[in-house]
Length: 584
Image 1 (cartoon, one colour):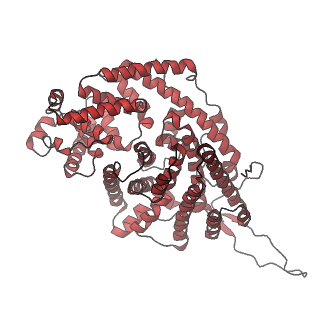
Image 2 (image 1 turned 45 degrees about the vertical axis):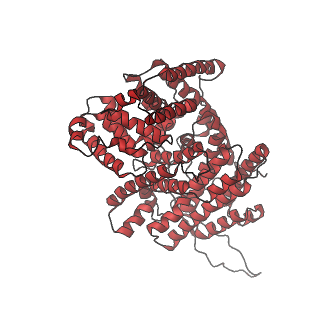
Image 3 (image 1 turned 30 degrees about the vertical axis):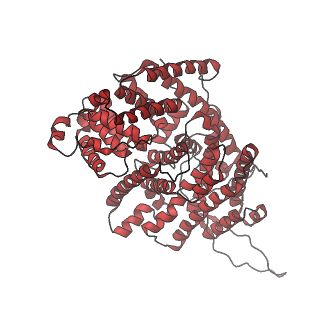
């Protein structure tokens, strides 16, 4: 393995129009004046510098580590486990499971949650008096049961809502039931496109939008506002756990042991994440890319946040470290292709990556040599780790995933440099690869699976329906937040602009249609995520969907939460990785 630290070289500086002057050569022994060549005009993204530097990440400290802290957590975990096991009422069981998930504790009790939900699901086939009593006219109980069962792969029929929707009685008897309407709204996102649930969504969303500012219960009003902004099905529990703890602490059904465990577990995991961030920042500092290439987005904190969004489970330490490196390197190469390089340079760089030959690196300009060698070292290091641990050679799959991505980047670069306007469908076919869904899915599988199975790798490389849908949603969500800024930098039109051109509609209409399209594709994902022809483990499919959910959290407000770190992204990084929750 060849490693190189370019830290001693002088940085490459970029302005809005950086020009590189070619060397002047003499072509004979007589004095000649060389014919001047056109200077290379470089674009710049005018990206903000990173908020957190290497020294900041290395300075992170926590008090929530060590045997004493872990022993305390183990005791609380057993206490909470007993609480779930001793709850008898089915509605109380469901509300407790929902609280576990929203507090970020679900991963501790996966088996217990599965057993409880399976028991509740199977009770539908019997005359369960407790459920009959709870469900009779109880919109919240019905919707909560429906959402949690659907979320965990149990197909509860949407016909259970027939008694609530589509008659005069619904409007009169449930108009004041904000909690029930909120649960119905959330349940409508756990469906696969049933017409009855589309009706439920329309009614519940209209009701909640009309009453959100007049809800007397401030905590319930906050939950309604957040749900209208982004439903639970599209959110990452870890990213919202800290916020929800404040809601839960004030709720009437708060259980002290559950709250204590949630806070302590949050702080313990935060300490683990801090150590992971230190490892990633050491790698990034060693590459010197952030110092040498000042035209790129130095977004290590945001890159690590993506990894936590995809999987926050403590056992996935290796995954988070490696995927943060991958995403930061993807960000770097995206800026090379989108902003800085000429088309000729991009053709050459893509060719060098396709050949995967260090000797061909000599053909590249200096800044591209740095990029290629960093990519080469990272991929070979990962391949070595997996080969050493599992005796499985993943280098061909890693190379192919990066080659596919850069070829998709090159297509978009050609569109830009030739002034080509793709159709919406044409853009989406290429865009589902350039958005990085396939490469992140494949590498996430490699980082978390033991043993790695050849048939799983082949399945992922075939772009199965669930991965294709997830990548399309990712593409639309990203463009929803970034397309305006990218067009200002002179980038190729994105999905929204292509849709506007195809349909002849305004940007406002196009954005509304994109939201509807994302919801439709989410419904399709819900339909196929548990399909019989999907050989992948359910937990890994959830990681793929978590990638999409993280994209929603970065881009939902119409902002570029990855490119622009201040604001919500800065708040999330600070609350997740730097500030522990007071336990008292």
